[in-house]
Image 1: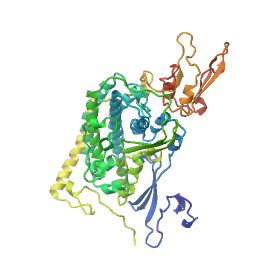
Image 2: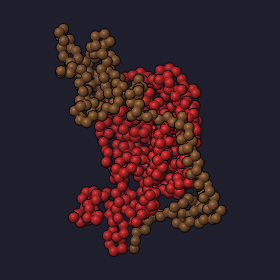
Image 3: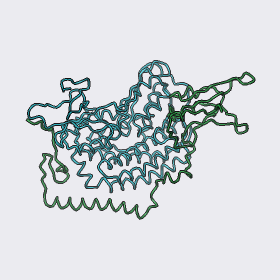
Image 4: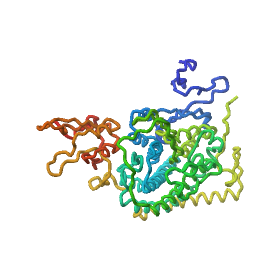
Length: 395
Length: 175
């Protein structure tokens, strides 16, 4: 088989082995062009954060081009969603970005509430904000630990999981699950928070304050960390916007865009928090933005815990949620960026079409611009600071 | 001609941060080099100091010794383990009225409620089938039950070697 016999995805012979590469991805084999080669990274690679497969066109140790090869864990959640009621769809959103499952649940609930005009009690709004911010910290903690591990520092992985465990315990006591929460419902949540919720949250906030300083000592001020991330993977603000990046990736490039501020959902407009932005747009800026985001989330949680109201935790519960025919959209800021939920409803209990605009997918599209020209070893911190989550990309 | 990378950048940090321009050429000054050297070593020592701090003060450690504490481990009351039927305190009969709401609420078809007629020709629960292999532990069935007849159990470590072990008959098992 030769290169000319390329199939649909393009099979290319590399050292006598047929490699499936994306269309349009080929090496010029003419005289003088033969130094380049393909390298397959993933899907089962420890530093691709799950099962991301990357096809790299390499020249020696330099990465010339990166093409993500998607679909390894595609589950067709949007198609499955068409055969599930709106209430059942909530548990599918857990499986988009499993580290932001509360926030994903909220995105769908907001769309349903918008469509049916369901109000949310004060206490439920506070629960939502506090839980979502805890989830953001928890997600960033995992990212922080794994980033260190990607760079070869196992210590940070253990330290990151230490405080994450406290937050996960809060979630477990509150809704019974540690990862796939399925906690929020249209109009509130399926259960009230336990009495221990506020004391535990306060304890976590207190501990996190000193913990983030520890993280700074361990990794932020570490010289190896600086050498591995500073000046690596510079993402210009225009490029980031052109790719539709959002979240810490976009803010790291200096664009102060945050859905919580620009399109406040729930009661985010009542809390004071800053939007950290980077200046250079390199890996270290994205890192610093996430570290600062944890501190800002702590501010929000502290403020919310101080004025946590009583009252009902859920408004009227419906037996079935039949959305009136029409299209509905809601967006939230997950730990990774803008998650949009678009529902095309036909009046029945199930959506005619449901579409998730996931942040990781857009963020990943900037990967080639970031990594091309760098060494292979620099690709690892670039992927790590993009913080893509593969189930969020493949859906 | 060899294909050149678009923007090959060197290793180091930008000039505004102390000593390097991204044209691949590193421009060091002696003072900058020494500062960098001392600060770099200090940062490593500080990080190691933190590690030793935890080593000498293990009281701050919050992780559990999981497999060792398996016998004493108690889950939270709301923990969502696998589904279980709630039995009547006195008679030991299930509270379930076989209305089938949980079956309808389940997103994955994990539950089948089969009815039978009792001696008074009333519909009662015959068998309650639960396919744990399909269950996502989403809690929607428990929420849908108006009789409080099902609950999420507290057991964990639910893996099995054979998927047929996960086809459970919660009630009406043929002996």
